[in-house]
Image (cartoon, rainbow, N blue to C red; front, side):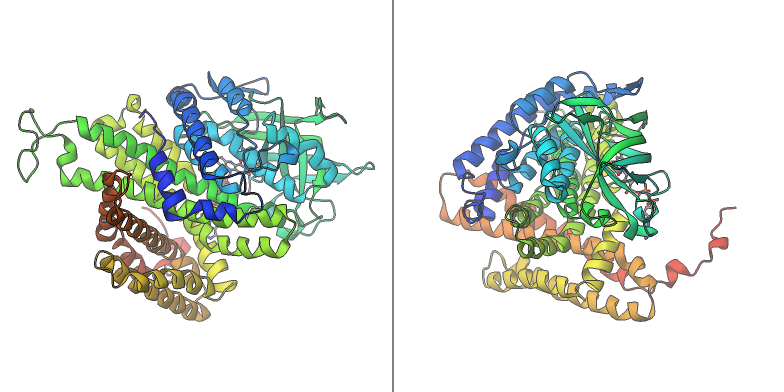
Length: 605
Ligand SMILES: Cc1cc2nc3c(=O)[nH]c(=O)nc-3n(C[C@H](O)[C@H](O)[C@H](O)COP(=O)(O)OP(=O)(O)OC[C@H]3O[C@@H](n4cnc5c(N)ncnc54)[C@H](O)[C@@H]3O)c2cc1C
């Protein structure tokens, strides 16, 4: 397994030089304590924990996996101690309100932390990660009484949480949820049903697990409009907040998975378990989705994590492994052969990983500012503010989740390729990265579902192309501003063309969809990928612009960092952005080539 080193210089570049986080934090009601020194100190401390505690557990955790015995799950050796350190460090409540025992930092700080933890050890990160999802949902939708009981132990990390949506018959189509909720005289509910694939559903890290569960009331309408949301603890808390009696949430199995083996994925049977409703009856799905954008950023980060870790491993190997001579002549004549990093094709793979990791990080750090505003709307009880920023984030989220996780997977595969046959061998850890990355395009909505959400909901139905117009106007503005700068002209020209084309493609699909409804599904994947490549191009151009300016100004920072940024931006525009052209061409083809073949002729003989 590659030794993880947190990319603190790149994080500082984005925080201070590209996105001006100091000014952003100063503008937030909960950002006053996030001054540059505090932010730097938190990130350095987090990096140390991730590098020294979490990263060394990644490979052994994958080998050992989780064990289930008598309904109890044991996590791999070292996880419990690492979790205790995590809790003692106050990391779980970093971005949650001080009234619950958190540190009250803006949401973005939590996202920066997630990237470091997830790169060091994604399986470990799943336990506190799912808990954050549960905390956000409870914070926004539960009564004050329930919040007072559940939020402090969750914020401190003494208890963890889960999100229980999926059932054997449905994952995407939650309208099919069958779990039942019977009202009781005391205002509670008896919850009965089976949930599958529940991450962190059972484990030995915390003294209690609080499940946030989708279930149906007896008189609920069919489909998505008949689903309510409940808190169902593993152990019922006593009135004073201690851990009480077992609540009949039985873990009957854990999945044997391709990757993230140290993350327990549980089958949970709710056997008349006591639950309490949060949010309004039959509006549970809506409530569950309020924090969906931030949850999906959390999974988008997984793409960056795997790209980063795989890049770090491949880079070190490419500098050591020797094979033949570079075509342009010997690079290390005193050695038996040149290091493989001198071959252009190996550089293509390394630069692809670097471009996806750093380009993806830039996308996340941009979106994290939207997430800060959105969360502040919730904390301040300002529904209008919340909605404004949630809508802005809503367009960007499926692009990030869909595109970055697919790119993370590609980068992880390139990491294996750089290692040659050794990439396929377990001890180097490169194959683990690819196995761990594979889930990211499936959970929190598959890539196909992100694509439909983007094109169908966000672009066509909700905004009739307005979301694309708004986002591309930012890109076009950047292009105009940089067109006269000789160093930036190549990026500005390309961006101006893509921004215009993105709108044209949107209009074309919108018109075609009036006659051919299938075209939305048929075009959606290509539309998502096109949007991803063009969006990442903007963030690479932005980074190149800042790096050029910094180089021209001089200063104390190492110029090599800025030069590498410019070189990677150039690589991205020359080698990766052209992929968008293929997606543009495919997305406007008639849906017939996909739909014409009758199901009964879809055979293998
Ligand atoms: C390791 C792991 C951890 C998980 N953690 C959790 C968790 O903590 N909590 C939880 O509730 N769930 C969890 N899940 C479940 C996960 O979110 C679902 O598996 C996922 O949402 C996909 O649902 P599905 O498996 O039912 O696939 P399906 O919905 O059956 O989809 C199958 C295929 O059909 C496509 N498809 C479906 N509908 C459409 C459509 N309308 N248009 C076009 N294509 C479509 C999909 O894109 C996919 O390719 C986890 C799953 C795994 C494997």
